[in-house]
Length: 167
Image (cartoon, rainbow, N blue to C red; front, side, top):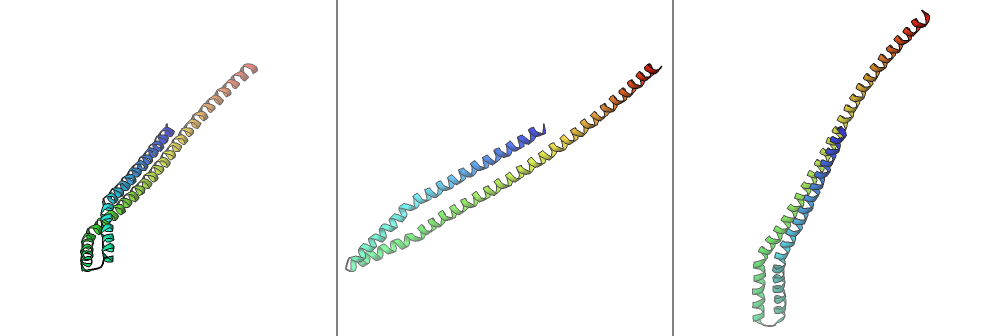
């Protein structure tokens, strides 16, 4: 009976660990998807900034006052967009860091659950051993009593036989 409880406890611990593993896998997948979504949103903005920088580089090569004015306007536009782009990149980095911390927390929780399951299994094994030891002592005592009873019966039979033979 105790081995059944131990087996059940171990199976439950195994199931819990599998569930934690699967949850971590899902969270990592979702964090990856979030990072990809953020990148998809950021990439066109970065391409726009790259395009503006390319326009500026081309216009710098063109002589004259108009080219310099266009370059200045383009540079001002890039400079005006930079803080928003920088904030968006900072948010993506913060989200990824937060996701990593969440995963680390889940891993720590899984370790604690595994340790607790191990402790429960050890306790169940000790209880089963104590129970088996108690049952063994009881069986030993019963066997001793039966042997003493059988010895007394043999002694009585031998005495009776002696009386019959020598009387």
